[in-house]
Every structure is written in structure tokens, then in C-alpha cells.
Length: 103
Image (cartoon, rainbow, N blue to C red):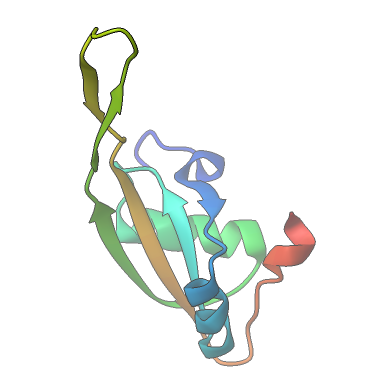
């Protein structure tokens, strides 16, 4: 996999209300390494969860600006959250991943 290990490609599953609704349609969301491509993500999911992947869609989540104030007139500190990569994985019909059992 060109320098990336299978264990390192998937950082964590994303469990939100939207993503739990997508699970009924055989779609699962993961935070993945920003350097990983769709082929590497597909291989990692198939080897980790023993399923067959139909499609992989990826998107880069841009960093958000954040600021916090300090006391006694010292001004504000401004910065950013980190950016990250999200992957939506669609499985073949009849395949499932039990994410809540894995936690």
C-alpha cells in the first residue's frame, strides 16, 4: 500500500445521528489519513471488517477558525482547528459492520 499500513489508514468511525441513518443504507463514515486514497481506504475497510466494499467517497473537511479571549486585557488568541479527511464507504447488499460492538 505504498508506505501506509492498513491499520493506520482508518483513524476512527464517525458515529453521529446522520451517520447512523446512513447505516440503514449500507453506508459508513470514517475519519481517515489525509494521505490515503480511495483504493487504500477500500482495502483497509475490507481487511479490517471482513466485508466487500462497493464504493468509496471522500471529502476533505476544512479547518475552522477559532478564537478565545484572555483576561486582563492580554488580547485574543486566534487559531484553527485541524483539517481532516472523511470517507463514506458503501458496502455490497447484505454486508454490515457492527460499529457499536467494536467500541
